[in-house]
Length: 230
Image (cartoon, rainbow, N blue to C red; front, side, top):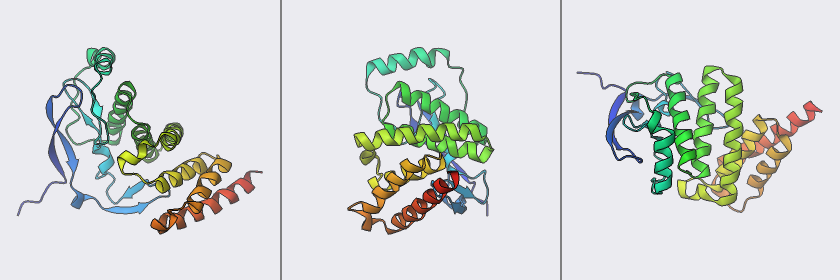
């Protein structure tokens, strides 16, 4: 019996130029999770088999990079700006094969650029930034990890204010918790405590008891870390 390969081809249509192309995805049965960290970073038994590496689709034709969370690109001015800024300088690269972590960094940075040009929702930009920070964590590039963690926190805070997270299946409790944890990791302990407190006092906290427990633990952790820095 032939062994089923971990990667498979998925047909997709570019949100920018409507070109059809194939991109790789990782079969769920191939993924072996070892541990989930407090900011939802996941460690896998085989780091090569990390689904995050394949989240970004990159159009070979025009260079538009996007995830399944992206909104359709409708504005003519956005398309014109992308054509000018990216497609006109695009040297066709095929990201539709197996990817290394460094190649994944390139795809996420392309997606960040595409997202900025096409005014994607703050919660989408936050997710791209957070996952870039995870990839840099695996690579041991601490400065870049911290930089994109800052971006993620800022975008998530914007999302909290404008409410666009609701359209992407993210609960307000999850968002508040993640803002608390990201700020804790960035040594913004007062701000972290405020977000964790919002989780603990939220009227819907009973709907996510595990997240509530985690927020309580991390709120205590932030308090202890703040004491130790004085």
